[in-house]
Amino acid sequence: MFDYKNIKNEQLQSFLKGTMSETLGMEIVELGPNYLSMRMPVDHRTIQPLGILNGGASLALAETVASYAGNILVRKDNKHCVGIDINGNHLKSVRSGFVTAKASPIHVGKRTQVWNIDITDEENDLVCKARMTLLVIENK
Amino acid sequence: MFDYKNIKNEQLQSFLKGTMSETLGMEIVELGPNYLSMRMPVDHRTIQPLGILNGGASLALAETVASYAGNILVRKDNKHCVGIDINGNHLKSVRSGFVTAKASPIHVGKRTQVWNIDITDEENDLVCKARMTLLVIENK
Amino acid sequence: MFDYKNIKNEQLQSFLKGTMSETLGMEIVELGPNYLSMRMPVDHRTIQPLGILNGGASLALAETVASYAGNILVRKDNKHCVGIDINGNHLKSVRSGFVTAKASPIHVGKRTQVWNIDITDEENDLVCKARMTLLVIENK
Amino acid sequence: MFDYKNIKNEQLQSFLKGTMSETLGMEIVELGPNYLSMRMPVDHRTIQPLGILNGGASLALAETVASYAGNILVRKDNKHCVGIDINGNHLKSVRSGFVTAKASPIHVGKRTQVWNIDITDEENDLVCKARMTLLVIENK
Image 1 (cartoon, chains in turn purple, cyan, red, green):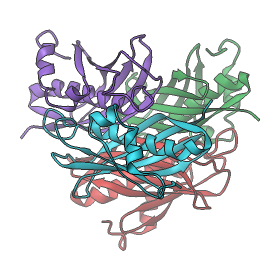
Image 2: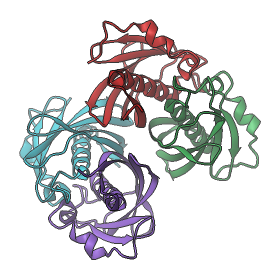
Image 3: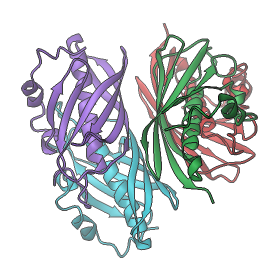
Image 4: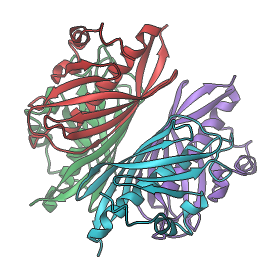
């Protein structure tokens, strides 16, 4: 699915300079044959007042990784993706370390894509499960 | 619903120091009789690579304002709220200025709360519509 | 928005013959200037084992009314709508009578539409709040 | 997880008499060690006006199977589950035969449960993917 042997993390990371992803400390972990994963620190940049990961930061990560994955997939066809909607369930609270989000395709259509995003902590427990719908648009 | 005449913005804002909200530039706008609104800048802190507001930043804001509102509502009863799930539709892209999120209650129950969050831009157009479910828990 | 003065309930109802809507007892209530409402009985056709309205019946009604509304809106342009995704929160249980769903547009775009659906009982209390995303497609 | 060797399909099916499930033709397929599956016909009971499965019927099935699974899981502890919210993406249209929904747990907590529901057609293609949140309540 992905041309993952020819796309380097540094390339993918470089597009995130000067964006929300950089602000929150998000980093590309791995582009695999059929997934993209990114991680995010649980620290002052991403916590809420009680000192645990803000669920909104999980959604920010989920949306970023799914949108990025969708766009990587269609750019060779001179298309791009825009996010239509997203939903997520919060399953575990996290106080430190990194969380990692892995986006995997549920549906890759001509007009829409649907992605599953699993966010896990360093003990590999599920922190958040999200699903995102993208609209595929031809570049002008 | 809210004791809004006796709660000052500075108080509410002070709890957000050293958290994701501060990182992304979120500010309390107003606690009203039955709503809480916060705003967030559209700049390097919140955009995605194409220069528009990252939809994930919208969700981060939506989750923050709804969770905060729910917690303000129950803390006098020695309870707190945790986010269970959230969903949002992206409706318009934004390139600059501020977006403002207003959280209004759909359902305030003993066990759960459900909030609507409307995020609008400076032209008052709807940018994102979200719904969040909170679980109400007694403090130990 | 809708040509509601020239579209009769009987016309709208007639399309539902021999479908799930008829099976569950759904009826057109009113096509207004900017909404469509339908009602559904709470009886053996729609309850779950405890004798209350099956939340799944609420979703079935919500999806039906929003999809119908979206299709009414675009058919004059030789287009049709298909449902991409839906979400709903259950807020109150109902044991008898009718529930009424009202679909109102949140966003009417060229490529997508987003609808809010409020389902209320005979006391006008909110039973379910749903949001549905439709894809707009040109007829061939 | 489930005491699946001692619970018979006929028992599970018998609770659905005189409910929406019977109206729409839903049948228990299998209670496994960690899942419950049910099927539903695609016919006049479940289609929309264009002759394809009404997406709302998919949601009705998804909600039924997840709620049933959650309740089976907690009844030995003198508890029951109520549906808080559900979401689903529609991925493929179906014109005939049966669709089968399989509910698998994402999270089984003391206060809440979260279930994934995959609905597939007779070619084993994914028709709908849904996620449901249940609240766990002690019986009085």
